[in-house]
Amino acid sequence: EAGVAQSPRYKIIEKRQSVAFWCNPISGHATLYWYQQILGQGPKLLIQFQNNGVVDDSQLPKDRFSAERLKGVDSTLKIQPAKLEDSAVYLCASSPRDLGESEQYFGPGTRLTVT
Amino acid sequence: AQTVTQSQPEMSVQEAETVTLSCTYDTSENNYYLFWYKQPPSRQMILVIRQEAYKQQNATENRFSVNFQKAAKSFSLKISDSQLGDTAMYFCAFTFRTGANNLFFGTGTRLTVIP
Image (cartoon, rainbow over all chains, first blue to last red; front, top):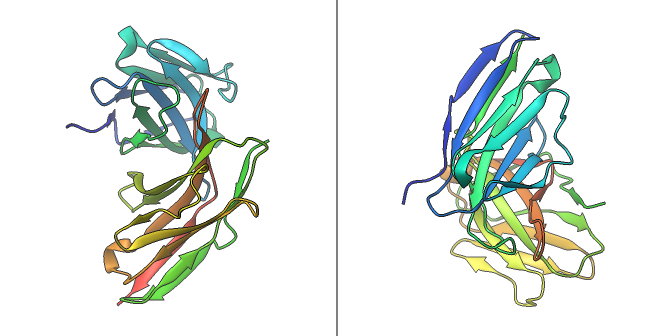
């Protein structure tokens, strides 16, 4: 079974530029999560999708961050414009159908550096 | 608010010895899961072990076991016969059993296994 795929693995941009990250969850997993992990901290949820609907985006800075999940499969996370404090690893995770299912499977993450 | 506290930023252990990582959490909910995740330098979060809060029996997974004290809201991880491949960041996390099930993470403990 293929795992959660993410691209790119690394990205360096200047502040005020835009950037997009892509995630392909495990086949059949209905729930998809984006986490932000700042250096030295644990991951923090940005947004959670159930199929192509948003379950929780309360921690997403909506003035600059946006996310979508097309057809309930792949997802993209965009930052526009980027700030220095957005430098972090962005982790995508997926879990099986039911919202009550507890196990999440993580991708390798995208390390973003904003200069 | 849900919080997870890992009070040991760094720990080290000799190869083949035993080490215990501490974790405390705070939630007013009664139904939840607890996890330990391992994050090696490759950044991929790997599930080490999980515990259902409604089960009194402590979970074990080969060399990994937990000491779950629900009343004290404590969830420590014991690694026996430590191996060099255990060197990584370890994150304690929990999620609710029902509803939106994003993970709440601690700040992590960096474990180094010394040959």
